[in-house]
Structure formats: structure tokens, C-alpha cells
Length: 56
Image 1 (cartoon, one colour):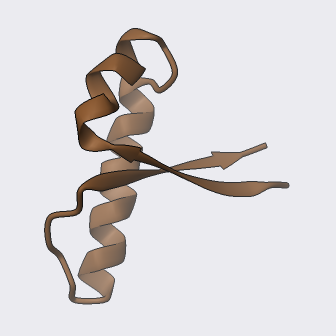
Image 2 (cartoon, one colour; image 1 turned 60 degrees about the vertical axis):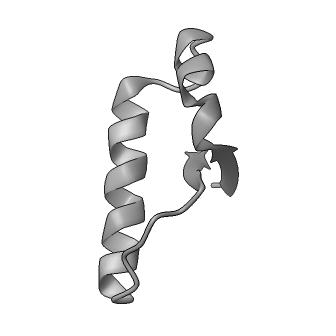
């Protein structure tokens, strides 16, 4: 199993979805994971990028 973290700037999201690089379902998971991580660390704040986890 490979666990890779890829960062995407927020302004690129619509293009990524349109190009089918990233799915809406993945996006929901991404934001959920991101928020959960920061809630655990008690550091929930705006980030200029999102994190996409690829497991293969």
C-alpha cells in the first residue's frame, strides 16, 4: 500500500473536478479528513490548499 499526500490550491478545485482528476466524493472525504485532523489538534483554521490522499 502506498500512502501519498498531494496538495492542491483551492482555486484549482473546479478545474480538477471538471477534468475528472478529482471526484466530488473524494472532495467530501478530503475536507472531512482535513477538518477532523485540525479538530483533533485543536487548530481548525483556513488553509490555502487541500490534501488528497491516494492509496493504491
